[in-house]
Length: 92
Image 1: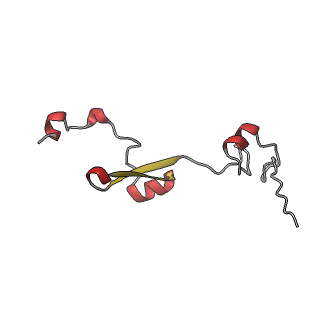
Image 2 (image 1 turned 45 degrees about the horizontal axis):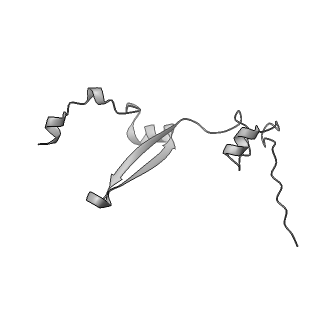
Image 3 (image 1 turned 135 degrees about the vertical axis):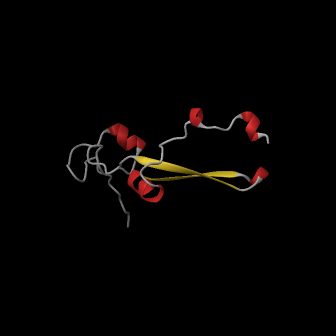
């Protein structure tokens, strides 16, 4: 017995054609861009380990989840111009 899987190119919500570029970028896409539930994301970088065993990890979450955890007043990115540390201070 053979199992044949047929991938639809129609959006499961609005039944319009899913663009070929979207299917190429996201082969498992079941919705068109308009019906997609993707929203703005925020990320937190985690640095762990020591010396040669140092690693970075990136946690990506919905913007609402980020604001719930860290508060709504957190900047979207770090502004190096506003940072008070200089190269001289870092070597102390």
